[in-house]
Image 1 (cartoon, helix red, strand yellow):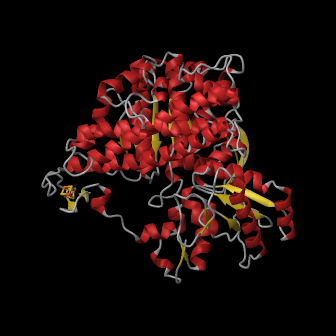
Image 2 (image 1 turned 90 degrees about the vertical axis):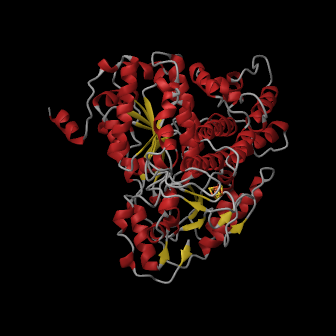
Amino acid sequence: MQEKEKKSVEKLPDVNDVTTCESTAQMLRKARKDGVEICFDRAATMKACPIGADSACCKHCSMGPCRLNSKDPYSKVGVCGATIDTIMARNFGRMVAAGTAAHTDHGMGMLELFREVVNGHIQDFTIKDTQKLIDVAASIGIETSDRSVKDIANDLYKELERTYTQVEGEIPFARRVPSKTLETWRKQGIVPRGAMREIMEMMHRTAIGVDQHYENITKQCSRTALADGWGGSMVSTEISDILYGTPTPILTEVNMGVLKENQVNIIIHGHEPNLFESMIASVNTPTLIEAAKQAGAQGINLVGMCCSGAEMMSRHGIPHAGNFTSTEAVLVTGAVDAQAPLFTTNPRCHIEGATHIQFAEHDPRACTDEIVIKAITRFKNRKLPVEIPKTSNPSIHGFSYEYINYMLGGSFRGSYTPLNDNIINGRIRGVAGVVGCTNPRVKQDYVHVELVKRLIQNDVLVLQTGCSQIALAKAGLYTPEAAYLAGPGLREVCETVGMPPVLGLGSCVDNSRILIAASEMVRVGGLGESIADLPVAGAAPEWMSEKAIAIGQYFVASGVFTVFGVTFPIVDGTNFHKLLFDGLEKQGMGKWGFTPDPIEMADLMIAHIDKKRKALGIDKARERILVDMADRRLIEAA
Ligand code: SF4
């Protein structure tokens, strides 16, 4: 966050136009009073470049940079001869490569930690969920009967390392892909090898003078993205569960009201579950709690934000202060004594002006204890008045793929059969994954919340990860009582099982849980033979990161219709656009969609779900109508 001289607030948009989150709005008003600029102000004063927004420019060599006319995209080509389709496909491919690199580097870090735990070189972390270890090993053909945990774990490490380093052949988790989906990938030549190889080839092919054909580049986009979704990200989630425990539903609190004025507040932000796990141990250390009390605090309050926050909320019920675009706003409270922007811990990530205290898995407490000590000192020296928004919302999270299995079928007959049955009989129209960040170029949380409300009103069960679930949690949809907002069929299922109509599955990396859930729906039967046959759809309504493009592409390549909001980084009506928004579906995969409007987005997703229901011959089980809030009131009044 950057302090600036007090600027004319008249030039900045009304706070109620940039966020629906009351806590963030309150902090934005305070920031303006305090003369502090945050991301919403910067977004208002930094206009997006229209050519860049359409991806109609290229700077891949020094004959350029070249700018094409996105209003008349075929009127010229780059100096090298690159057409608009080549340029957009190359730019898109590099976004996929960057997003995949981020997820897979994180996943590889988790796998290295696992190796060191198994070798006994690291004692601060252990294998907490041996059943998950056995299940994951068995899922990729590792023998598990009559073998020690250590032997299974060693084999699992060796096998999963291929996810990243394998030069030829299919990655291990390709065995989890429904056979017809895998057949499509093989036909298209997009079954991923190791992520390093795919990212390397993506970067190679998108350099000047290499791959000029947007269709061929798109194949590598899919292959690289699949190395993320079914590779790096999936390994990360599975190893996190093995080391830290598979989430089960847990009640927590979400929103800035989780900060405590009279306690030392520590927020963990970013994508650092290992740091978070160690921090849990540090804040529960009696000597550090005593030191906090000596400093005048009643205790130490550990809170999460953004993705690590979503993961820890799901796994341990740690309260969550807010999603991505509330990052700076929460600091304006004056109550945060330690957060990642003030302390950086990962050697990959330093921030000018922040204190770097490096985290090492071999000695994690050295870092987290030091941060706690510094936070206590900061608490003692708090000088400015503290203002904490009062709101916090009770919220249930932690619906792992395994728990959904148990929840629907019980201990003895845990299965996705009840879910498939309820889709076939029409009580549940279909399933939507609504994920992704928030983006200061659109009103914070608005599209997430309105989209999800419209989906559940129309009996679509919603699965969520990342910051999107925080938007819905703040809107109060993460309790079983929120089932009253659902359509009659979904409401009946939620009330029978006692579950919310919206299920939170963890962080953005945990989108792989949605892929596994989709595969299980195919395996159980009755809903087609591939993921592309399922009545499902996905959305990232307020996306902003390259990682979102990688995620979107792996969902599309897996067979899911995936709709993005805010903006879509290519020119409408071009050949590349037609391929992403239509052609991939004809090849047996999913396709992209785009609209910034939440109602239109929901209706696109519902129309797709209905199209799939019709193709499966289960459309007669329910009337094909869209239900909105006014209809619901009429139904309830009748
Ligand atoms: Fe221009 Fe081609 Fe160089 Fe890109 S690669 S900057 S389009 S000359």
